[in-house]
Length: 79
Length: 79
Image: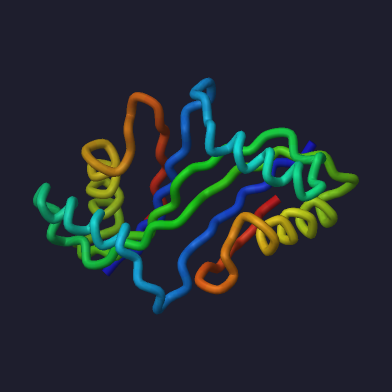
């Protein structure tokens, strides 16, 4: 059983309204020091696989097919 | 200028319906090898701070006050 950690982030240049909202919320609490906020997703998967390399390959395929939107998002997988 | 990475995860034991939905979606695509999915948030902050330690402390305070729900979520900060 392997644990895969997936980090999905918006590509740079893609507008992030959620991040802007978080930045405004932080500024309203007094944290004007925050200049930029980008919000992404973090997933933890537990999966069966014969070895680390094939787990990594499978999870990357899952990201391309379902978990991330390759048009606007980048992803990174750690097994 | 520092970059802080924030990982917010549901505490273990807290139901994760979004993770269950992702697991079912993966199973429908043929990935029955996936036994568990937990969905969390990932944030990147760019902020001004005098040094790494104070950036870390400030971002942890932001997490407690706004970014995470300490009742059901854990967070981890890397500066």
